[in-house]
Amino acid sequence: NPETPAIAASERARAERVLAQAERIVFTSPLTLESMLQRFPALTRSKLVTITNGFDEVAVTPLRDWPQDKCVFRYVGTLNVRRQPDGLIRAFELACREPGFREAAVLELIGSAGGHESKSALAPSAQVVFRGPVSHAESQRYMFGSDINLLLQTISEGCWPRLQDDRRL
Image (cartoon, rainbow, N blue to C red; front, side, top):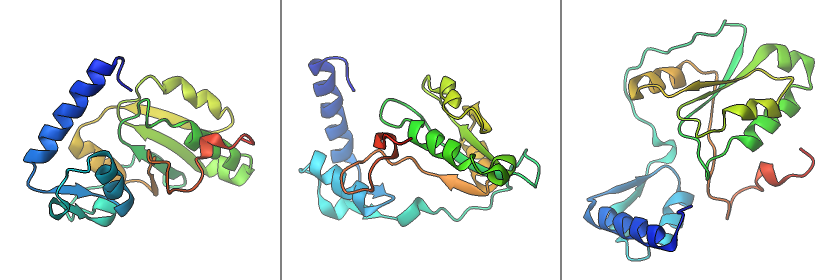
């Protein structure tokens, strides 16, 4: 969130200029497309397209530096004020109450952690690793080397209840 109303207005004006100049705006889900239209109603719908899951058919050599007997759950991307790993880490901790899962699984967060590195403490019985930023090419290789890739949804309206709001965690 911007620190002042003036910064918020400046950021919005810049976003409107960039979006107005774009020939095409690509989304990975209809939900994010509709959310953008609500935030920026002046957008021309014909410029908007959804490519579900944002699949890119490119040859990538998987990068896996965990033993093959580990099930690697990965989040690759930026963490920040809107995209926080708390619910994901707490859910992983809950899953790790099952001894077989705890021994077999690792949660790795790759990318700028935005000050969230200490949150591995939310899962004391789980193996949670913050790797830090990597290049775009490396991030693709890490995603292809994962057993399970994870997504942190930042749009709460129209989605399942946010895990971090579940007081039982």
